[in-house]
Image (cartoon, rainbow, N blue to C red; front, side, top):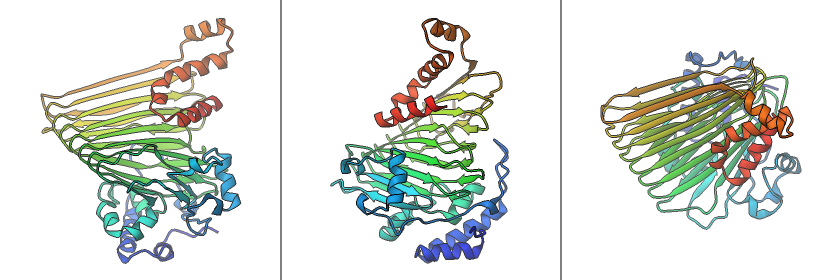
Length: 431
């Protein structure tokens, strides 16, 4: 039974989670702002009935550290998705969230890192948590950051100590199984000085007749000389609104890279951002969005140059077929004091038929004379000449289109860990 989103619901949720008073106050403040704010005025039209969603569902009695302790139903869900392997060695550095809570987490690395659910971090590292929570993505930025602030649950909390290099990526997987569920994870990542992290996130949902809502928030802090790579492939069902806010702040000599794949969801609004605060810091974003029938993918990136000698590079690949809409929307700003900085934006779109659409909607701002900002955009239909050539070699029209699409997204696949590149190939072939 769905319970309407009210102050009493939020009070009971915070009580159920055994949270400190300051978090309850924050949730209630966020809920008040959520009711005041309207939907964004840009991007796809959002016709959302917030009373139709289930805002919290827990399917497990706490997060398990041993895969053998996880219930058979939950095991079956993740094994069928190919998220986990039967061998225990592949379950290290992994968090799985089903519905509103983390159901499995295991990290047996001997390095002195923190990797746990955000709920557990609030209890076990309260001072560290409070220092970074809501400091980069504010609750009152838009209607969906306010909603996340009010009802957030789950997500990953990661702290990588100075000079620490991990030998394999950390992974999280988010799954919605319940009809009309809202999932509102909160992820906080701190990569301390001269450390490095590669993080992989996957997202899927079952198909239903009613809509579900995913409104996550990600805050990443890249300290001096540190490196962070955040890989995402989301394959939400067409019934999901995917409305997320992801932002990183990068200090001196630091590097942040977003690798962002959007294959599913009915409507996506997602613009991973880098604030290049420190001198000589770098921000990169490489993304792919594949929109098919009944999908509107409004995605891109934001790069804000504040430090001197900063560099950013945005590469956006968009594909649309069967009437889908795949748009690039982004902002690149080189501020007045960000002297001798360089920014490049490259947007390529391929349309597979005559009924699909794509627009490039950039905002490029250059406020000093010693920096350069370049933007290149192309939108084209799939080449009839190339199709004819491949078909003359014995390929069917569908096989030829598949080969051309795979070549088009090759740069993106190169940035993914091998197992995720294989998974992307599988997803693209199913479309």
